[in-house]
Length: 492
Image (tube, rainbow, N blue to C red):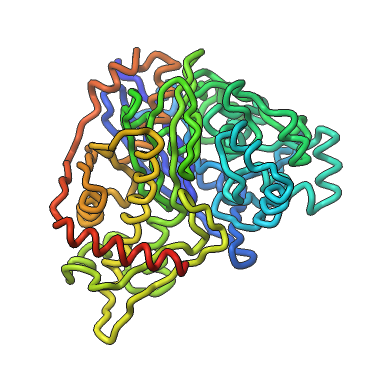
């Protein structure tokens, strides 16, 4: 008898639900977008209720599309946009502020304060992270600083903090469970990488009371069961959790040290499995928990670029050059190259390995002959060249070259982008048959905890490559692209 797993992939621009069976057959996949909120330049928020409604509505849609009854779901796995910070009332579950999204730059001042006090190395050694507005700790600190009533309620134990995974579990269990997993906790600037628990000294520095924090659990265990939902029966175990990029690493079956993947979503995120010991970067990368399974902990090096698919969305929504995201490929194919046009998509700052929150996007090299096709091509080049910078830093830290980079995410369906990526990094690009590897990773973690799959070996045996892209561009052409890119970066 088949067993089914429901994966919730709660992303930056929308929520995706995937229902699959133990043979990885996808019975249903549905997505629902929700509004982005931009209160000020550089600020990004979500209404937590929009996140919750999109989750419930998409579960209903996915179940309606499948041929199974909701009672046949064996387990639920959750993966989520990381670092996005929520704070809600413990009794009512009502948010006290909009969620502050990982892209938001409002805490640049707090980060500068901490750096001025000489604290960056302390945070890096304890958490593997840099002091950047990207991470949850300074976002939570900002919420508590900005509102005296919120601060008092937090210190009195009346409020609960969480990243999106924690918020969803709280709501799915009817307010019974306040928990996060080690991979998401490792993105907060508040968890010690070695102990896998909240660090009291860092909490004091950030002025965050420990009473608001969730329990830190593993990535594959039963955290609680559904209760009081109109779309699912009570009692379904919620059994897997990981931040979206760690879930993608797991879903790509990157289970051995040296395995690497890049997820092309709103941003582009490169992770390399480094095994059971954290490797602190000297090249501007992050050290993060990949996953915790029972007592086994795997770590990863990570480099994140903040804008990838979001640059394509900007061409669509901001400039109106394309009607849908997939339209960028045929438009870009109208020209053989960008002909010297360079687009650095730093609309919300530069992430790894540069960490320049004040940087902004730049288009350089416009001529009278520049067309929409050139800009489309330069956009794909810019996405790939950002990933190239991250991989260069990763290879330096790891001491070895990445020969095969597994890819996933919506933009990985773009054949031209994948070919450009193979060309600029001079490595094979391996694309799986199913690009929803983030959701698959969450499903695998939940299924392992509930014995839908017996082991990672079983999962690895059914992972399949759909296509491989190999380098084709002449090195002289790559070198010219890199030279123009480096010059433009200095101006961003």
